[in-house]
Image (tube, rainbow, N blue to C red):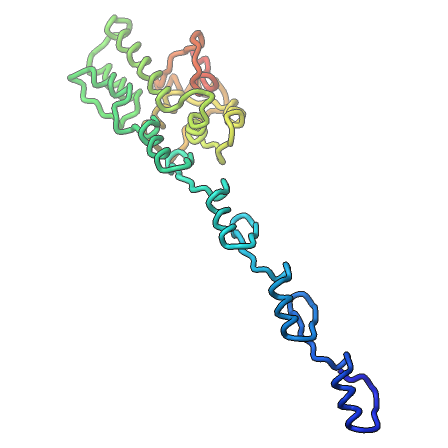
Length: 270
């Protein structure tokens, strides 16, 4: 850098250029705007300064570590990076493969290959050609015609009670207790609540004004349909639909029941 000084000999100028701090070679750190008078001093700065320590960054949670070992320990131990084993069918996650497999074995949602209470009821009539893919109310109407029951006869009454017992058992199979978040999520999916609430209380708030036919809910569970169950604006509209379709679920208001549907969605129709 010129310093606007004059000398009376070249020897004096050269001495000035050698000795003046203004003309000393500068070794600059490009990262932190500091200058050093030798390469050795610059390299020592790069080695020792915390500002230039190598950084081992976790891309997922925006944290940095001073060694690769510390980063790997973080990835192993942090709950944020724990492996998640997800059930694609019912939106639940598990901490290990064993827990996921146990869920798949034990959850009623994943037991669709076994006989359900309605299957057992309809197959208890050996000469009846039962089709499990049909809606329960349709199958019951076909069974009535097949057996030739007259309204009010003992055989008709016994069959109706057996059918209603099977409907209630099936309801418990697809939708569990009101303190079970999985049961609430099944109900929310059935009636189209999105996104799924995070707690049982939030689910209850989301569905509490819903009017829906209980047999339709059972049919949705059996069919594993992607379409949501039809809902109604009020009890009168639901009552008219229930009478028209014959999709009747007996009132159980006099019974204590913790089932999520019966506790919150059963309406007095008749």
